[in-house]
Structures are given as structure tokens and as C-alpha cells.
Image (cartoon, rainbow over the protein chains, first blue to last red):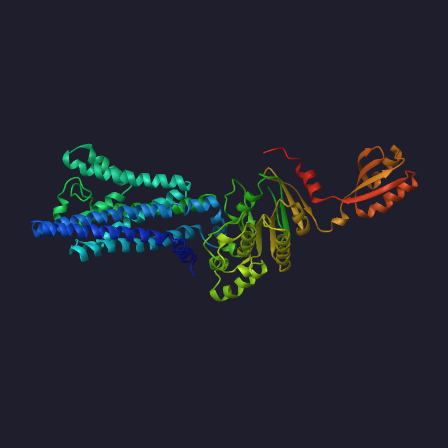
Length: 277
Length: 282
């Protein structure tokens, strides 16, 4: 077996064996239960009111978007927390020495671990995102637009966070790494909101700050693109929400995010190849 | 640092804390880049991926994924070395048996003692029958039985033609295991010594005699150097064990009236202190 897959496989098994994936999924299941119950009660309330069916559908769609936004935040934080120790922790403990002295190129070690997490996140995002969409459909009969493209963008967002964590893990200790990547995501989050708020003040520097934040860390921009693609038109008209159609990131920004990911991965490999272990 | 290690030998690497022993090993394995110079392992530049198929390494304080069982750990390392499933099925139980962990083959590493971790670490270093084996403190944390077992395994590796590069603080272990040793201090090789046939090497002798006069002591120079004279006690370093009967005969004939003659082989610890020097603090 190619050493890349040997390492990817053990990284994936580590998540399962350490009950990391299962714990995250149990927490996710708890979230889905709460979300499903909330949606059910909202539907019951709306049925007893005199709201028009069209408007009722829009409100339920907006609730589903809030659920997906929560999944998105959970997925990014889960990505960072589960992967933050994988490179820096193994360097600090010396565990990496027994692997890096085997007939395996260092890039195999790093990319193999990365693939292990890519597979784990595919399952996590697939179940959480799919579960939320399924809850929306079964409980409230809501179907969002472009769910597959939206799901893939949320997955891309997680991969961005994962790759940033890997890159910082080749430079910094576990704690510092976590602080930096969570800080970067926080910056992107803040930038996204400032950009949304710029809808109230045309031509202000808020847009510039938002775009600059997205260029430094494009995670939130990718979510806003996903929200734009999935949400019903009325929800997009709500100002100052994570789903507002104010300054929607373009397809170019998604392309930039992909390029950003590849550059970060390349830098991580480059530095990991050269650093002392 | 300039050092060459002959194939098929057990080579000891000795030095005080911070002398650069582990760093040197890491440079030879490509884990650390040298600030200058070059190193070769089996004729190939150190750190080359392909040459690592012939190299095994036990890091100091071996640690690995705690959730793996002993068998899974060896299978993982075997697969990294390109071993197929059929070969691993034969090799893994055999190796676990050799390091004394066969009864623990399905136990997770999180339940292993430090000594057991050292043993499984040694097993992963040997999984692919390497030609060169680097062992960094292989007996640390081991009980006397464990040390004996590791010593026997190291000798067995040499007997099958492998070269073992051994880094240890335990001088007694080095003394009974190694063919050659290198002494390192401040990142430099001070000297290398062959430990085989040490009977032919210098012997320290403590002589106690009634009449030790300067002329008699001067006459000993043909066989020995006089280290210290304290009343009736003279400490000598003889050039070889063969010289001892002649020294004793000379002392008797010269009328020194010796009543005690105690040869002591110079231990590796004495040699270490002599070569590397006293602890100068960190």
C-alpha cells in the first residue's frame, strides 16, 4: 500500500478509535434533535396563526438557514479542534520521529494526515449538513435551492480551516496554532459582518475591511456564497443577517479560496519538508 | 565531527548530557539538518528516503499512538516500510515474541509501562530487518531482565550482519555490548576506542609494599607509569596484563617487600571520566 494511504488510513482510524468522530457526531445528533424540535414547534405555531402559506414557507426556510449556519460554525470549530494537535503535537512529543525515519517522504506524512482529515470531515459535514436539510424537508417540507453546491462550499470552508491548522502546525505549538487559526476565522467572521453592515452606509470603508478580511481568511466569504446560493429570495432581502444579499462574494472569491487552500497546503509541505523534527 | 562506523559492528556513542549524541543521530537520520558538512549512511547521503528501507531507529523515550495495540503498531510500521500482509503475518508475532511482548499483542499502548514501550519501540525499529539500526537509549526504563533481553537482541542483530549504533548513558551496558565506542563532547568526537580484547589494554594496579624507594619506582617505568604514591601504597598503570608478572617479580627482587598486588581493569566509566572529563555543569 502506498505510504500516503497508510498514513491517511491511520489518521482516519485515530479519529474513530479516539472516539473523536463519534463524540462530534453525538453532539451533532443532539444539535439536530434540538433543531428538529424547534422547527416542529415553529411549524405548529405558524399553522395556528393566519400567516399566508408563502410567507410561512419563507420563515421556515430562514429557520433552516439558521440551522445550516450553526452547522457551518460547528463544523469549522470541530475541524480546528480535532486537527490542531496532529502536526505540532506529534512534533512536540517526538511521535513523528518514528514515522519520519521510515522510507516515507515527509510530504507523504503531511498529505496523508491531511487526507485522513479530509475523509473524516466529508463524513461529518455530509451527516450534519444532510441531516439538517433532511430535518427541514421531513418536518417542515422546506427544500432549499442548490443544496449540493451549498454543502460543497461548507465542506470547502472546513478544508480551508483544516489546511490553515496544518500550515500553522508546522510552525507553532498546538496552543499557539489553535489561537492563530481560531483568530483568523474570527477575523473572517467579523469581516463578513462588517461587509454586511456596509449595506447601511454605502461607500464606507466597511466593504474594504470585509474584503481584506476575506482575502486574509476566506472561510466566512465561502459561507456567505453558500448562503446566497441556498437561501430563498426573501431571506436574502433581510439586512444584517449572515444570509443577506449585501456584498455577496462572487464565484471568483470561491476560486480564490481554492487557490488559497492549495497555497497553504503547498507552504505546509514546504516548511514541513525543511524543518527539524 | 568526523566519524566512520564499520559495518557489522555494535558502535557505542558516549558523552555527557548536551554533548550532541541525539542530535548527531537525528542528523544521520535526516530528522535534523546539519549546519554544515555531510553525512552518509550505507554510502548514501543521510536522510535519503530510499536508504531508510535499510535503516531502523528507536527514538529516546519512544512514544506512539496510545490507542494502537502492539500488533497494530508493528503492522503500521511494517506497512510504512513496504511490507505486505503475508510477510507481516509472519514477522509481527515473531518479533513480539522476541521482545517479550507476545502475551500483550492485543493490548493497547496506553496500558503499557515505560519498559514495555521501549520493547515495542525496539520491535518497530527491527520490523523490516534493517542493515543499520540506531538505538537512542534503548535500555532506559528497563528492568535488569529487560536490559538483558535488549542486549541479546542487539548482539543477535550484529550476528546477522547488521550494524548497530547505540547511544546510551549506561556505561556498563555499552561496555558489555559494544565493539567500539566514540566519545563525544561539545559536538566533537574526542576519541574512539576498540573495546574488543581489552585484556591487552592498560591495567591499573594498586601495590602495597614495605619499602618503596624512589630508585625502585623509577625502575618500573619500563612496564608502567606511576600515578600516585601514598606511603606504602603505589598506584600504577601497566601497559598490558602481560606485564603484571614481570612487575611483581621486579618488586620482589628489588626488596620492596610487596604484601598486596591488586590489578584492576580500567572500567569504561574511568575511561569516560578520563577522556570526557568531570562534569562542568550545564
